Image 1 (cartoon, rainbow, N blue to C red):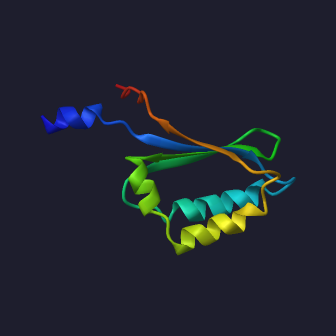
Image 2 (image 1 turned 180 degrees about the vertical axis):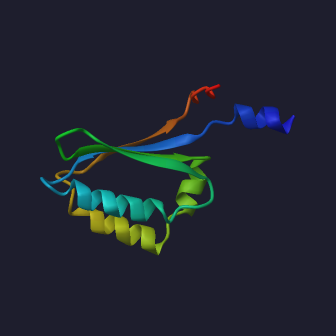
Length: 109
């Protein structure tokens, strides 16, 4: 029964959409990777997407639940996020989403 209940449980995604100052995307990417590498309990993976030829991007971070996201905030994480702040061209738009469906590639024969 617990496997069935686990199946019904949805992950959450934290999504941030924003633009960095010209030429600063690579620096922001390095800080993003450092910040995400501090996560542990409940962390399910992360992506940083870059619109080709621009300094615009989307960060997507997956969590088992929202409480785990809050629990992973620590001094190092906060310092890295603060360090990243001056790289943004403007405040990023942030939201939380419940993962409604997840499709994995089929195994190749």
